[in-house]
Image (cartoon, rainbow, N blue to C red):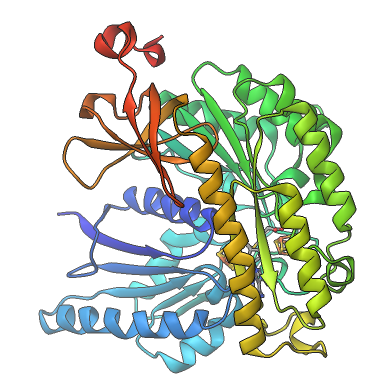
Length: 457
Ligand code: SAH
Ligand code: SF4
Ligand code: F3S
């Protein structure tokens, strides 16, 4: 009988990718994934430490998992509880101390050691592993056990050497590391062989990618994207998250030259004030960011842009905040994420003077979001009436409905037969809201006759 595995994932796409890989590793040990923790033999919380209350959230979830563990124990069976991810890396000791019923705590770079760790934990030895091992987890990845669906993540780079003063990632994920191009290409081939149409290359700093091939040559991200585009199979390529400083000319040119590279880019700027950017150690100015955007737009005029923003970083004045609003007005983003600054223990920002009061952060966030949400709504509105190729990558909540993505990363709800799941189909956008759109399939020869679907070629 197979054992049951429950994984809950917080945080970035990297964690989503890691959870998938953990499930693959554990599948080879006889664990089948389940949606709920009830009766699970192994429960893993894959955690995120990026903003406040991360640890508290983990403890509140742990409390619930403990009940499942006790219920299982009452039946004379053993269930293991594990905390993985960035909270485990940053606060592993605290977790072990405060929650005696936790069996395993391990950081993001140790997943390949799971079989051994489980063996130890099953033998009643509590496991803690927050090392940064010399050999990487990527050298031990199992074959994918199940298809990733129409749209898949592929980690190509991990860790970060940028040390933005607000951010925990360099501490939780470790130094920047790029997977060798050959390894990436092989994984890409495996993914598309299982039917995936869209690959999103992942990295905390993905455009800093510098993989070394067997001949000793260094590949940048532009070269890697070009090689993946050459493969038979993937129809859409994306990458995230990028840093403005690593947006080199070749990568910009790739947006012009590589048709499979989708016209959407998430390029976080965080602030529009040079003073704050310097305090944040971002190592670029607002003008430099705008220059990169201008070059990108020249290469690919229809490129849709998104960004992350932090309001209320220590030292941020009203004038700095106005500079951020001004930058937003100049760029006109298709979508965005915005956050109130949250001091992270161990980062330089946490001990900087000029702390911005919470109520001021609230007002600034609201002002910023009013503009960002307006732009997002405007962007979606602007698509109404257009016909776009949509990749159906999710099932809608209602029967007979599919959810897809335009090249510009907008969500589209469409009444569509299930057989079109995983296909790219022309859709006319009929309606738009702030968060997405709804459309109708444009009935052509291709969509009427499945054997002629454009993706079947
Ligand atoms: N590597 C990416 C993003 C990493 S984290 C980059 O370089 O931009 C994702 C986003 O979380 C960041 O872009 C930032 O906007 C936000 N973030 C990170 N640390 C934060 C903090 N301490 N408080 C608030 N937001 C934060
Ligand atoms: Fe964090 Fe900055 Fe690295 Fe992004 S570039 S992961 S924000 S330190
Ligand atoms: Fe969170 Fe770690 Fe990703 S802190 S955002 S899960 S790298």
